[in-house]
Length: 403
Image (tube, rainbow, N blue to C red; front, side):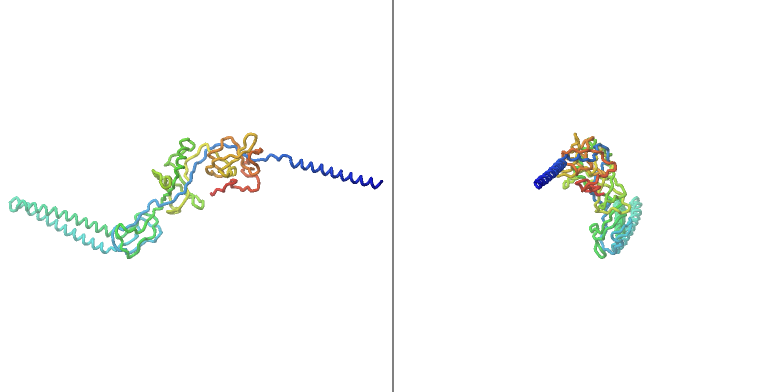
């Protein structure tokens, strides 16, 4: 009897333990299905402001004055005086054509001038003799007329001889070829001993590199949009001739001198659909070289009513840029926007946002579309909360801007 009673007590204890365990398990299940806390996100309120409008284009530098060096005379090249690829000054000696034949031509021309002068003296003396004889009827009128004609012919022959002398001296002077401008000189294309043809053979080229030109090609689509923006007063432009420009080299460094717009071609290039623009830059330190590629940033215009948002607020979706907007009831929904360009550490948004709307800056990775959030103002220092995958200085889903 006692043994049977002990067994019953043991079973009751086991059942009680199982009941307690089951009750504990039910409480854990109830706890696991409780609602998730509303995620906290940092937001900014969209506003408009006036910001610089500084479009950028790829440009190529070129000499402001390339001068081809050719010989004015035909002859044998005797000497070259310059070092290739160096600076030359106006008047520096470049080449020497063999001057001996031209010296001989000058001497011959001088002799012809002397002969013509002697003939003119003789003609004048003859005319002076026959004129008084005509009054005495010692000579005929024809004799006088012949003497006048001879004097005129002698004068003409003297002028022709003097012209030949000028040409001979010109040729002799041009046997020495000098630099017509200051600049950088290219490699020589001819060497000593070669027969140089007048005005035909290209000897070398001198490039004036201070100032320098930079040519950019503005796409037609950009020009059309800019005209619409100016007409709609979304952009205030000081005028074409008042635009300034700065250069950015391939390594990101900024050129220390500003340039000015110098020329806008009147027509579009049919092969590219763009309009060439020429900007002139001072180049005292020879930092710019012909053929160099640079980025040209135009200065002077401003964009009014511009919407700027932090870079990290803009995500890159399958069809473009996206931001999360906190709407009524603090519901976060994605919205496609048109992000035009960067202004410092912010995106310039052209379409998709209105002033007064709230967009999520930090905490996007913790929410899903259509989810309720608890918005708080973004921290003033702009620091994002620590979260896996956050990279300071980069917009989420985008690329870091090169500076």
